[in-house]
Image 1 (cartoon, rainbow, N blue to C red):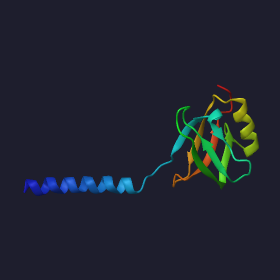
Image 2 (cartoon, helix red, strand yellow):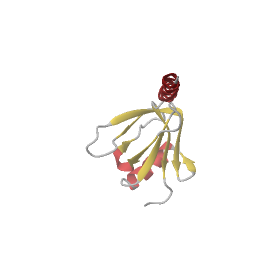
Image 3 (cartoon, helix red, strand yellow):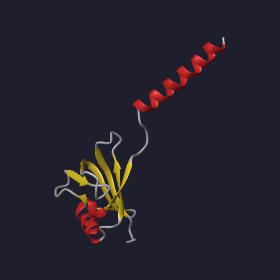
Length: 113
């Protein structure tokens, strides 16, 4: 009887873990130095970034809904690009879309740190 009970608990635990792995939830955000980001010229395009100087470059697309923010203000892509060039050592947030294939939001703090 106790073997069946233990087996049932193990099965339930494995089923729960498998379900969580198959459907990741929550937002994924990356912290990247502003100087390690190359933003696209057009509104839609590819953002190229490196998380460290020795790390490989990675690419993520933008969407029509990608937002660009300085502090709590939404700004145009070009305004954010200029701010990134002024503060290359500033950490910024790249928040990914739920499928982790594109950038939903790029945000840098309002004040230089």
